[in-house]
Image (cartoon, rainbow over all chains, first blue to last red; front, side):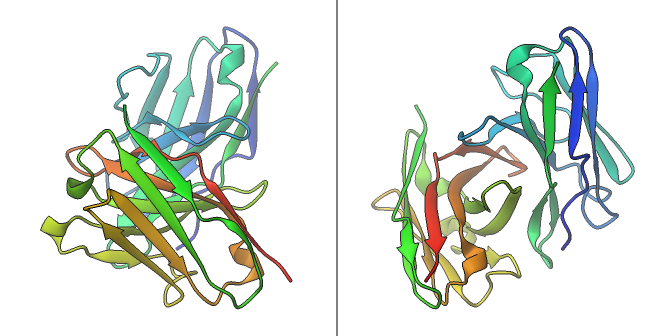
Length: 112
Length: 122
């Protein structure tokens, strides 16, 4: 099972909005609404930011939103803040006959 | 407060074995599926495998890259999950995280440990 495809890096200025894409296949992203997004600061464990495509866990800012169209999921961060600078990973369920779960390669977000 | 604490990492030679532990607290461990995810230095996250709850027959599943070499188990009486790693390769070098599968649909990983570093080198 190949990793989901994410851009290696994105950047934006404080206050702006950015979108990170996550492209999979009809066997993972396209088949299940079980896409989640994780934020990881250097040297830290990943933190859940979005689950089931567009749901936010308690405590996560409403500046974070998710969506999906076909085989591509997206994470949008609005009103960029300095603390948003981190690596972001998407993840999708890929079915029990394969690797079960597959992650994207990660996107480095730089807040200019 | 939910806590997951991994231990057991270290330096091991290629072909060797290592057993990682993940001690859980703050939630009903016995009812949760537990996963292991790893991250090589400077690289992305890679799903390693999972073990389901007793109600789901402690079913396990593994990534192709570790199948046949790694074994996940759990001891619900100790609120602990384990990752037994055999026939280790240099490419298994990574930080290993344990994580809980959360949500009504088991759709995501809601809590993560701090990770434990495994280095496979001669």
